[in-house]
Image (cartoon, rainbow, N blue to C red; front, side, top):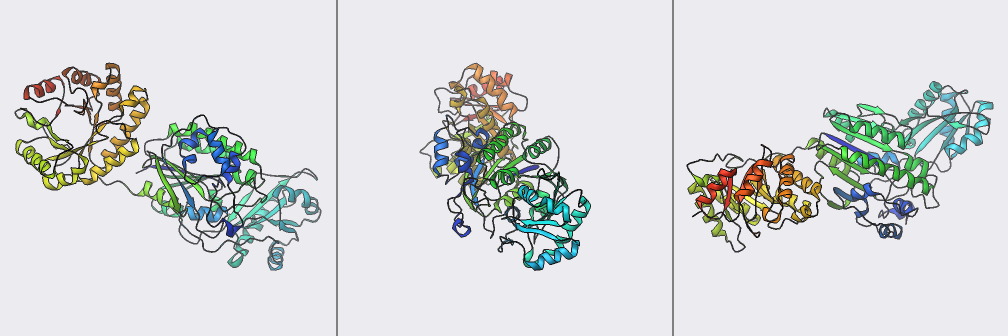
Length: 610
């Protein structure tokens, strides 16, 4: 369960191949491919989140870019492709859908301008004449109509390919508060069949030939027709912080804190500020420049530069994420800057998730509906992992110095072990008061059901060689716990130790420790001492301690040698007090077991003790 979720929308970063693109006249659109066509410069941090491992990135511009990369970091979280189901391709409908509200009817657009009934009503409620009334570039319209506006006081009303009515006015001709009042009244007017997504106040300043839009833009958005993700999270008492135009897209509804920005650079800066702040809930960010400045203006170099700016920011942000943070990157539609059109494009978009619950590589494949974003946020913030109740209780074993078997995990990991062998092992362990039985993962459910709480069930993960991926080990771990194992013995990746990839070894231990502890189980980390130098053993003792594992274990019993008294003593010396020692491998007598206990072990792994 996460405490904080950061949801960042790269406004318009489509990845092509929407199945219904033809219905929107957008066949072949691919915003990411257009960016990749600009240069072969790397996006290391987006790549590490899985952007370029998403299924279906078959556009030659992307595949050629990938071929040109010297290295491609492996993904470290969940990644996939999502398609929009709502009937529209604008920001409002896209954000509503990712917040759980689907729209079967597109918001109205006005490619030929607004009907006379709307224009006449605007004249009446503002007391001013109306000029332009066409789809227009926002920067060009003030240059073409600014002089007439200043001369007559008439309002410049225009639209775009989006569902929007925009009113531009010079701040010296129409005071800001007056312009805002006009737009508020226009919002009330534009309802029913004319319920556009946004009414936008577009103030400008300057003189003839040098008119400039100001930062005093204000949006009056259409309210979503049903409760959205921000509404639901706020109702649950969580923080809902908006950065950028999120507040406009949701009509300021469901938000507890709103931060306006002037564009991507400021939006990224505000996001980085909130990475350092304590809150409990959602920080919802829209980076609008991708769409507004570059997609709509068919500016491929500008789009690429902006995406590199965000990638660089990820390099600063990701290391600062906390263990209970979830970081999500997605988009709301496409806006391919390489096509003739300057309109949004109907494309699938990426979904990248890293952090709490998404800490190992996971190809999610193809997901239908942007609503998977809301579901992921709900799961992270509102669906805690419920610890299992084990019989006997996990950690209930209290060794009896008068009974050497109370220190022992009685083990049968033979490839030829049968159902009857496992039942016999459990009966014997229960009779002698063993700490647990350690069985193959395939026998955990049988062992748990047969034991009926007489003895704890332990199993092995990544066994015996340890070189399975972290994602595989995590899946094995959770599956084993679900089947009834309260103790997990995991083999580290010795190959990574030999390659000095200690950070990845540490991450893996931490991920599995968290998976165990969330579910009420304990983790024992097998380091296979026979393969290691003393320096490597000491480093692993420190790593296991920091990553909060419960035990460090000497050996699998399948290596070239088992436990030694010297290794146990070294481990006891260099491990933290929070870590217990398990000696395993080649311990076949009570005398050998006692020697390990005297050296600092608290648990023994053995198939038999003579």
